[in-house]
Image (tube, rainbow, N blue to C red; front, top):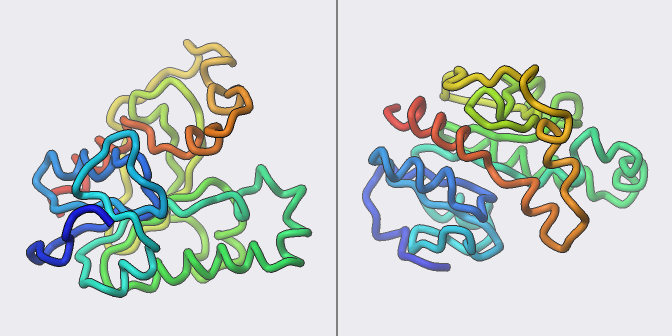
Length: 205
């Protein structure tokens, strides 16, 4: 991994499954000792505050004040429901649920993000605390996202966009991304507006 996170002081926040570093950087800008963690390198915003390692291993190796995680939704989201039967049979869906539950059960404040999917009905997390959309935070595209919150307050809109002023192509920009090796990664990146809202509303906790 990059950076020696074990030498830092108490009060560290871990941003899990975040290749982009957007939430990490937004939180650090308001004074939070935030570290991103992903099995992938941080290529968008390379930083010594990125840990390239297994998230569960990093969670267990250190005492964290808070964890904000964006676990992969490939085996969980409703948009991929036509493959759920196969993923249930071969164990992929249960493995994805187990991964999220282990994050959730960490003894600290926890926020978990995931699109509409099976976490609400098949995991210990239960129903999402709230659903948010990038258009709440100044973005011009739509992506309904669930937040499961433990110790964090609900996010409130900071710059709500009137979606009636947007074209179908703008609203569904992520859906219309051309097939490419990086399409899934681009679709999973945290919206900049949401990252800023997290920093502004949770960074002082």
